Length: 103
Image (cartoon, rainbow, N blue to C red; front, side):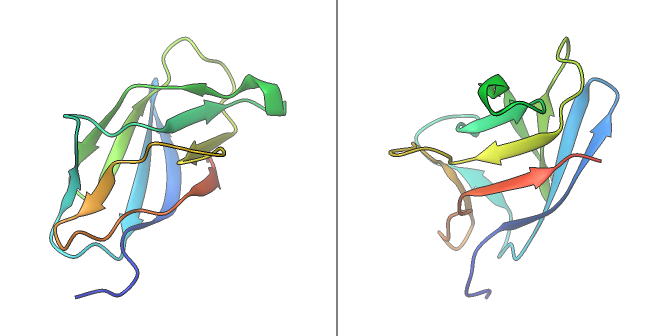
């Protein structure tokens, strides 16, 4: 059992999508109160370009739909003053807020 919960290690472009790899997962990634993970944003260079995106769990990571958005620079999760975050591992530990650069 891990003590910290899931945390991102990389964000890589895959065609029109972005795959965010996680480590520190006990069991598998799961969502609560929704079928898909929510609170993921794709961001271009300027700080005012972030917008929520569709996301699905895939193995030990998530796939973020970024079709039609040019030059995604970073991914944010669970950002803001009162975010609604629903990505956990099987042990019930949440993925905490993060921002990660996209390669």
